[in-house]
Image (tube, rainbow over all chains, first blue to last red; front, top):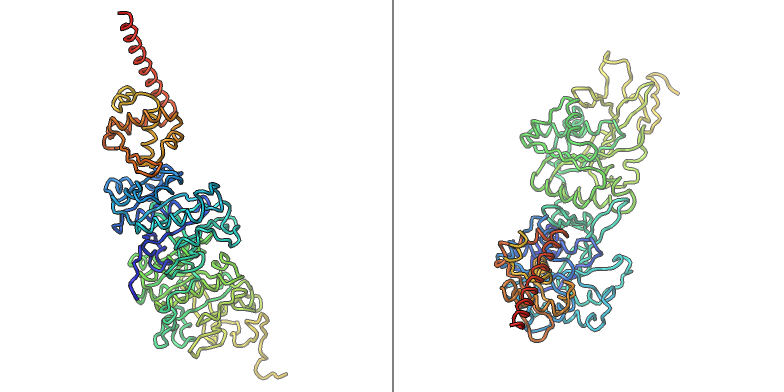
Length: 509
Length: 125
């Protein structure tokens, strides 16, 4: 198969969803309503080409004056005048009518200008499609657009054409513009309401002759940088990641919680996925901190991703159980990552997590907590499940042994592992943390409910959290004289919310 | 300051000024004369004279093609470098722009008076 001549847009994340870039000589429509980012995308395409890929370019404007474009581009750090002075960029202001004539003429002034700097790219901002505005039927016909496309192709220019859509793209009810049939690639930009917030999305709806990632991916326009496209987290990853999705049953990772590893036969398997479920205050975060501290003690890198508590709060929590994470953070063994849970952009969030995992190469990870993702993505539909699946696959590919905390709302006992978020089948291990009411006391219980490929202790065990020391799993038998209370084994129905004491020895029904 | 700017730029009237300011915002355009006149808001004849003036003093370069109605105009920024930015700054406010326009009008009428005087002197002699 001949190697394809791809033009890299240079726009962060866009080439990834375009499977490498645009085919050279393509005519690309970028459609969207006002304010969706068409001009920014087009200008960045030209800027990156001229500044980074040795591909001079032309920007053609009909409405925005060049001085405003130059001013706005400067906010992203794009020095367009410098490129003009270097003969790598020309910005031309004209009208649609003149442009249409120009592009069709063999001795076009505009194309002469393009040729003079060896232009390989062109961005035309503000074309109006036939269906939405320009009522001059002599020039605004599919044939006229076809001639335009031919003119651009003749010059071997890779063209991005910004097309203004009146109303919303979705209001077109699937009706295609005639221009979309002629263009090689069609990209749609949207601003989509999310509750009371708004999220930007980008969708490749057509890319003739090349593969691309379907669906609506999200993107941001970032000051000082430009456009950043975040691949839809649900989009399938490459097969390597899926093939690597297996833990290593020959290597154990210790939890750092005294007594817990014994229940597990020595610890978690390397690269395994563990769900720690319990109501607030049942010890999930404490267990997570001990797991990270244990990694640091062994010289293993860990990341702790928190959505519920900012970094300073996590450090304070750790200090209360005798863990000082700061030295491990300073030496680079531990990385605390906090992302605000409000209006979380899940595609961007996942991309950042992916970057950290690839660069930092941790052996351990904690996600605290899944419930917060659930609040953002909703429990219905596939969003949460697909997101979780993507995180699990990422961690397995990099053999990161990961704890996922999940807050179960039930105060006593547990009637289901994850309620409406039915993802427990994706995990290798499940640890339940419960409050058990015995007499006038709430006591903490730990049960290993699932552990793949491993024989484990299925008894519900009491555990305790002590200030300055953290969590530990207590022995099944309470040493004589240690306490006046009864051991858990003397009850049944602990997790079923109705603990009853076994009949004392010697008494029968 | 205003006098120096007007003299440095070689401007004669308000149309010269507005056309120059248009080209400073749009340094490379492809437009027909009619479109250009519509953008700056003057009569076609006035715009044609102002274009000739800017071309004559080397502030503007024009390229024509055979078939199309559009002409390409390129502002020769290099020639305007010392005074273009101060001129733009002054015209960034309505007051500044009106001051320059007033000055151009005054100079125009003085030039007109002088030539009238010359004409009437020639007639009487």
